[in-house]
Length: 85
Image (tube, rainbow, N blue to C red; front, side, top):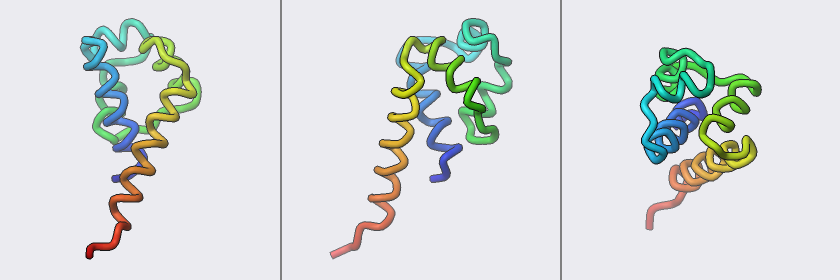
């Protein structure tokens, strides 16, 4: 899975966990709903400013958002390269 898709997966998961619609997240973060949708689908990448805006809207630290992405990326990489017995 590409990094953009992993970011989207994490973003969507956090949004749903907080019971936010894309519209509500857009309103809180001052981003466009269509941009949030594109990020969630892995079609667009966030800037550093966007990561900070999303983290604030999701009430987490930007470093926590990046950490979650990093963990999922490592998990995907480890799983992909594990040797089969």
